[in-house]
Image 1 (spheres, rainbow over the protein chains, first blue to last red):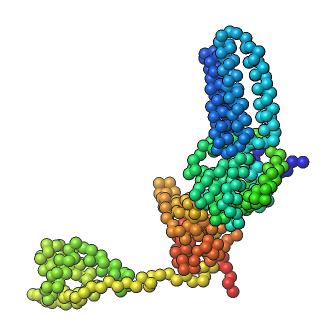
Image 2 (image 1 turned 45 degrees about the vertical axis):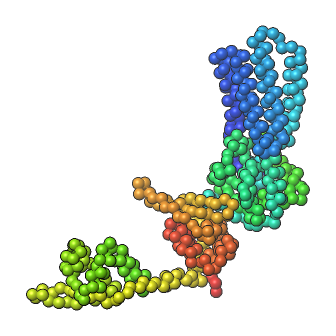
Length: 273
Length: 203
């Protein structure tokens, strides 16, 4: 039996926009010119997407995105070779066919594995579901103010190590400050804009702040609060989100980071939500 | 000297003709408003108001004289030195236990915008809107560091309200800073950002 969800069903198509955009531009350029131009345009767009995944790998340290980047490079090269092959009117030689088939199988298996194990899934939705789990009171009371959660006994190194873990596992984007780290959970669909935000522009988003003195504070964006099906008690929700991250940091300190992933996986949310 | 008297005296001294009038008062045994006006090329009403103002705060005395059955005043300098001495402690607010035991929290849908200083766990300012339509006005309130810390720790709407003293303790604010915190609470109450629930029963 599936647990009751507190978030509204995910009906956003934000995550599909790049793919739909690529298809539309590929179709349009083929229609206006010919298939060789279409394939060339497709290759360029795939490489641009590859650059985005490379950026995510560098920004977050998520290895899965490096694999996706490799896949994009491969697909782009294949599209370019196909374009040249059509242009010269020669059948693709056997080397191209072998490379194509083995590459598709290699990357296909890898990407299916990454998707199935949610290693390239942005975990914002899991975070909000977990934070809302203990909050039953219906009460609204939204305020744009951050909420202090309390003081925790973590060293600066422990906080930084947890922040790196959170980034690597796409639990949140991390912004480093001279006196604190701020973690911003990102839901699938928002992943194309959030990683590019500069450190001063996340304040309106939902964030969890750990300062190096151990003070923890939380801010929930109105957009994310309205994404819940019911008007949850806002004060309790903020406290729960803060406590969830404190608990995660505690688990990470004990070397039980895998438990954090297990808790999120136990929600059994689909890859695309 | 109380603040109001000092303010009155200060406003008289700030006039650009004040030094010239005092020069006449010092050098003349007694002088009338019309004589001052004629000597300094001022309007008679200006000179009269200035001298009356000085008489009001006790710098000059005035004596009524009759000239061809028409009475008028002559002004005599009473003090050779003007000292403005204000005891500012007289206007310091002393918080009473009742105000520190007010149970407060943020009002629901307060409509205020809070500017947060990241890394400092404090709020630097509050923007409040009041009025409707064309009458709508924006007011920005800059907060001191203790006030910002206090507001940062203020309970959310619908959360359990806390006493002012408890919030101060939570925010690590010294008791001696209570007057500026209470001033903020008063202002936030006025703009309906904070709601004051029942005062905690200390008995």
